Image (cartoon, rainbow, N blue to C red; front, side, top):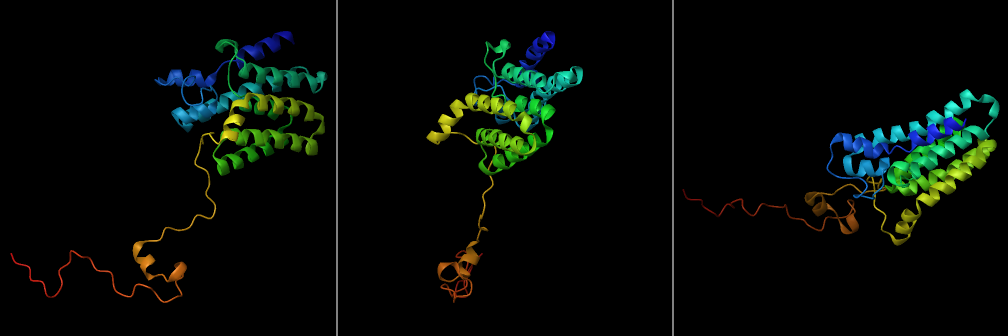
Length: 241
């Protein structure tokens, strides 16, 4: 069991975002550009969503793999043992020995661990994450909202795992301290373009001239003449040559 914990830390501490962008041959170091984070969000911001999603999958996988392995290899240990492994994977990603004990935010790795512990509440929280990301465009808002929602989902569907989720939610809040400060200052950047609800259709110039006051089409048009191209010759103009 101790060997499993050590192996979990050593593998989960690998900054896959940095590894992928380095193998890709990119000239931009994700540690010094964008948000400076080594997680999937910053990879997507600097290198696009293909590498970002690959980094996201690997970060989720390293949390899920070792947590699920702990449940399968030691089923008699109950919930506390895979919970410890999930916590180790989360901490390893956030405080990597390969990066002088710095790292990512731990959202994907924590989600991977919770997928192995409590799948249904975690999947529901992933849906919340996707909706909030699409609406706000900000990954930090989506992550914080999803972590809080996961606590609620576990209280409803899997109360025994709630204490694990509370630990991870507090950890995610801690790793997002700088993001929370930027959000309060209105300086947090967007990762994707948010949905704009109620956006009106673009109105062309000809349609605009046909409208009445306040944009109503049922009122008499204010402009009664037919729009004419000033470069077109009129009847009393003779063109020579």
